[in-house]
Length: 297
Image (cartoon, rainbow, N blue to C red):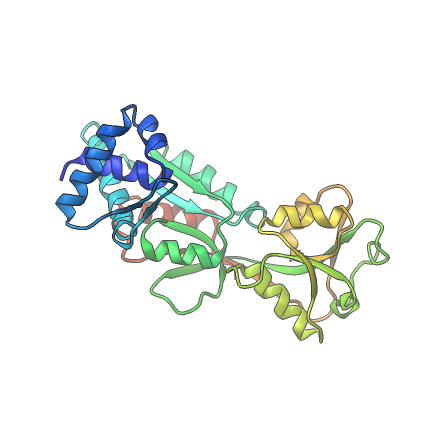
């Protein structure tokens, strides 16, 4: 097996199109197809399902992909280490986050990492909800993820980094917009805008559980996978929502955050990773995370 075969495989796996992958690799499509066939022959299994209209990874291809990423990453680390001074940390780390929910925690970590380890390349993937992040961490396609806690039982490790109260977001002209606080039960007749149900979002799970505890199920009229767009739809007068207190910092014009009275439901933010991950960079990143995002008392 040659390194260029793995580079070709990764390009096709990410593009799912031989023409685009060939352009990305600065080569013609025919030699690329031949390279993939050589890799499949060497592996003894087909890696792609090909048709005249589409290209898709086979189960074998999906299994190979995280290992191909790791092999190419390790090669790059080896190349850089050959020229590195003693004690310099080089490498690549892939990290996911949900989006607006992490606007307080993500920048603190990434800025600290860039200062401490400028030769570490960070790849950030946005709009990755907790359920998807867990799956990708277990597959090896992610190294570190911002998630909601607690996680369902899994071989992953996690640590709490923030705890934020849940509150209501209502349009600025809503009758409750000027209240200092409101009882969640007062929203039982409202139209709700929420993250998709069953999509692995901890915000949706926590918000729904809070409504049920208040004696009603939210009447969801719109689901959106982007937390900031939820705020935007509320500002547009399309309904109300429940979000973490930290998101009150980034409300669009036309939306108002109102704290909840009574027992406080909380959204718990954490970092998750796979202890078996062989990345040489991950332990250094976790050490920095401990310093800039300590577990709250």
